[in-house]
Image (cartoon, rainbow, N blue to C red; front, top):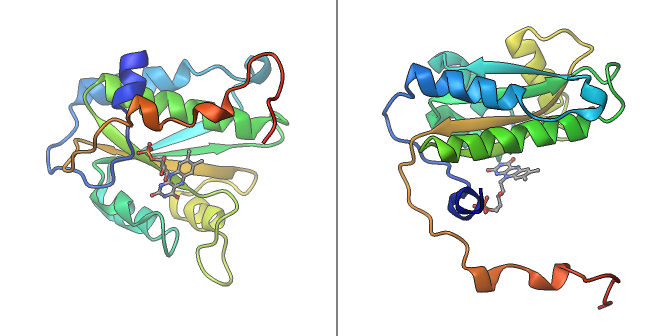
Amino acid sequence: MLDILRRRRSIRRFAEKEIEAEKIAALKEAILRAPTSRGLNSWEFIFVDDRELLHRLAQARRHGSAFLAGAKLAVVVAADPERCDVWIEDCAIAAIVLQLAAVSLGLDSCWAQIRLREHDERTGAGDYVRRLLGLPERFQVACVIGIGYAAEQKESHARDSLPWDRIHDNRYRGE
Ligand SMILES: Cc1cc2nc3c(=O)[nH]c(=O)nc-3n(C[C@H](O)[C@H](O)[C@H](O)COP(=O)(O)O)c2cc1C
């Protein structure tokens, strides 16, 4: 697991190579294995590989989601807040489980934030994605994870560059 964490970087440029069906099946299993509060599984996942839909997902935000157009797969992470009060945590955990599973399969990914972001002056990014994919109004969209084979190389974050000062032993050490 530490090796996977070391390899994970946000990749926004993807190769033309398609993702094998068995890898997509493994990603589906992985995301469903994410833990959820009280085991309520408040989330829903939409696996999008349709090119036209990927291009339209990329337009969810003016900045920050354009890379989805080049992804081979986008996983939309949404939830019904009525199912669980901590649906945001459920969604975030599922998203990172998916990203780490992708690395374990030789794939790379990047997170596009949707919740609390705008599509344009009048429409929230979540409403845009919901309408695009036919999600009923009771659902909130947390994020979209774009996945594919990397077409850019990024070094692992050096161990020395990690923010070690954010770790406190027993008590907060202050500024
Ligand atoms: C909650 C969250 C929201 C993010 N939103 C976006 C986003 O909207 N667009 C984007 O390109 N990257 C997004 N990222 C990726 C971060 O920019 C990236 O993880 C960070 O810069 C560190 O780089 P690394 O992932 O390569 O270590 C997001 C990451 C997280 C965890």
